[in-house]
Length: 302
Image 1 (cartoon, helix red, strand yellow):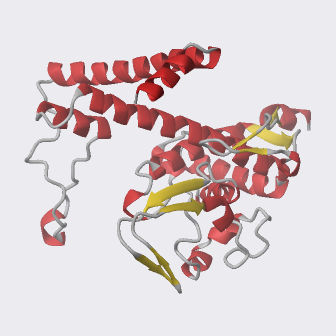
Image 2: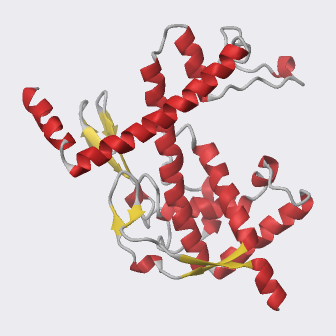
Image 3: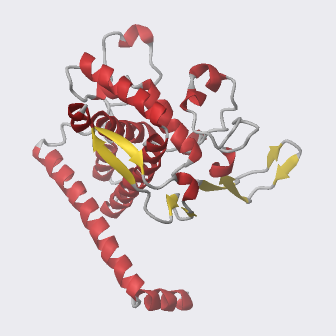
């Protein structure tokens, strides 16, 4: 223990250590401001919009009882604050949860956006099809980007899913078995650390013919139906899967739909030439550059 504390103190004195402390102060400060602002809101509204024991949404729905009734949904932070008021969590507990969401909510999504835009830049035919889908949806929606519109872009969603197959933001996850697990002819003893190679699974030719090819139609419903459910796990799977995956998909669709509507994307750097950097999140060792050409200027020149 003493040696660990000594090593930690020595690291904190290095340039990297000081930089890390500065970054952590920024992160924690941002998280604390978010929590404080939400707390103030609930104080001013006397907790009226916090979940209470009367807001039990765990019971199964009975179709005859919920017709015409929309259940109240609560933000994750509100649920944590309600638990804090009941003495189940401390402010530090809440901050740790918010820190996790801040990290997972931006770094993974930003990485996926970069890879998806690079793939669309390299595949002009697919990019044009995305643009056509977005433009048609906008015309039907009064030229407004709304949540409803984002849910009506199935081809763009397939493009993002295929990008996450080739370049999953979280490329490796680990699990510790709580009991003996039988896998085919192998017995994995309890207490074994398992490393799940998501990147490798997503490029396994047993599940994905021509795995290096970017093909969004792999995610047509009839093709998904006949594929092993765990052959595609960019958000993990099972009870410990990513609870923010729907929000992440909406984020990416919002960004990409707006960009593709307004710009033609052309490649500068090609993905076949980049070197993948192994970090907490999959990323390129160098910037992936694309060129944005405004659609209106191009149409005007024509």
